[in-house]
Length: 316
Image (cartoon, rainbow, N blue to C red; front, side):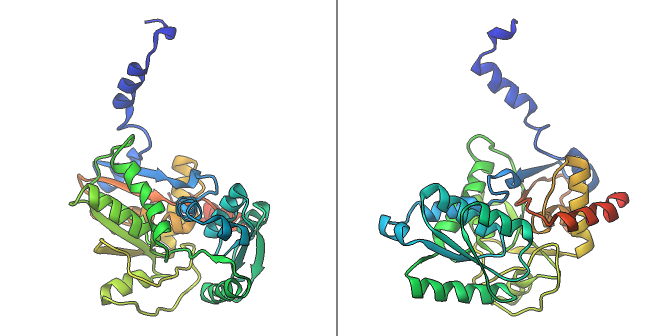
């Protein structure tokens, strides 16, 4: 057949031929005994993380009057990047309150997107209280990172893409970074609605484990946070429709980041690599199962990332 004779049907046939060999890690499957392991690469979203899905979902619902007044939010980085990016697209003034530990890469991105950056406090909770105060005082629209149905629904679109439509994967186990709960909730709702027997596992760092202990206790509990490559997690409500939870040690997260870089040439931040960390550490039994995990973001501190690759890359 001549190259110019290729048709749409040929491309569809090729897609079916190669689908089990692309966008998955055969080496990780071999190490864990899984039948297949797929990565949902949200690190390639425009702001470097999945957050743009929920933020776009929320801000498109704002009235013209609300848009004119502007938006404010609290964020450790990725959510703020998404808010300022979407705000710029829609012509909405935006303010982001960040705690002191927010890395420079995310601060620069927020400013580059045209947002106003306000630092307040040493924790996310302190930044959030300040954002709420500014919203009341200035009549700005407050966008919460996780406690918003439109944001949860936006994040849930990842599940629709994976389990129906173009990707239409056959997944037995879905491993999700637990984070603040919105991604885990949205994905759980979407995935369970499509495939009721799918097993959904939320993963957190042992240094930032509120969901692990809260779900075990059946109620929101307070925990002590430590420095973590997996990020510091906010929690206000219990994610819906999933029962399983795991946590991983900091060295496992670092090794996963190094492994993803060396095997797949991916720069993945710690909070986004917890699913791969759990797989490499053998925390989850995936033998003969079709598995997928979300690589939820790439916005990592450049200096720390280089240190991790130097230290842990040699161990892989």
